[in-house]
Image (tube, rainbow, N blue to C red; front, side, top):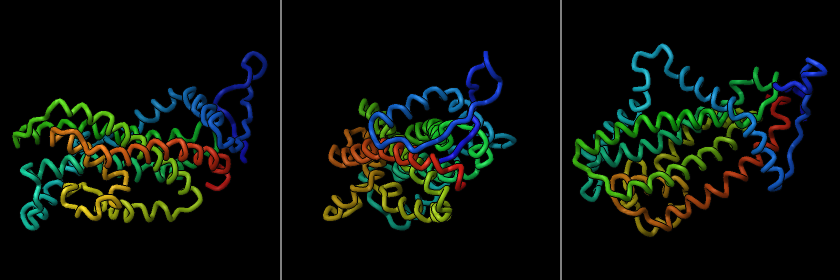
Length: 292
C-alpha cells in the first residue's frame, strides 16, 4: 500500500493543496473490475496524450521516420524467404512464400514490439510512478497502442506485396478485424502481467528476447500451419498465437474462413485472460511505487 499525490485537487474552492490518495488492492470481483475500468476511462485524455507522445518520440529526428515500422518485418521476410523458400523449400500450397512470411511477421511484430516495450514500461517511468497518481495500466497500454499504429502502417506494405505477387483478397478479409481485436486483447493481457511482474523481478525483462524468439518458432509465423504434423496439431494449437497468426493469414491471404476450432481456442484464452490479467495488475499496483 502506498500514498501518492493525485493529479486532481480535492476541492478547488476550498484549498489548492493536492489530495493524498491511498492505493489499496481492489477486490477480485466484477465490481472491482468495473470500478477500475471507470477510473481508467476518466484518464482517457492522459492515455491518448502519452500514446501520441510515445509515437512521436519513437520517430523523432529519424531519417526514415515511420518507415522503421515496416523495415523490420520486411528485412526478416527477405531473410526467411532465402532460408525457407530457397534452401528448405517449405510447401506453401501455391501461395508465394514472401506473402506468407510477411503476413505472419506483420502480426508477430505487433505482438513482440508491444510486449517487449510494455514489459519495461513501469520500470523506465519510475520517476513518474513514484511521484503522482494515475492508473498505472496506462503506461503498458500506451506501448500496445503505439505498436498497433505501426501495424496499421505495415498493412499498406502488405497490400503492395499482395499486388506484386497477384494475390487477390476476398470478402473474407473482413474477418481479419475481429482477429486483430483478439490479438490486441491477448497482447494487452500479457503486457499487464509481464510489466507488473517486471517491477519485482527484473529477470523478466532480461529473459523476454529469448522467450519471444522461442515463442515465434512455436507459432506459424515463418511457416504455414499445414507444415505442422497433424498428430501434434491439438497440442500445438493451445498456443494462442497459432490461431491468431493462422487466422489472419487465412483471411487476408488465403481468402478463406479461418479454421474455427484453432481460432476459438485463441479467442477463448485471450478473452478470459484479459480481465484476469487486469485484476492481477490492479492488485499488484498497490505496491508498485514501494518496490520499483
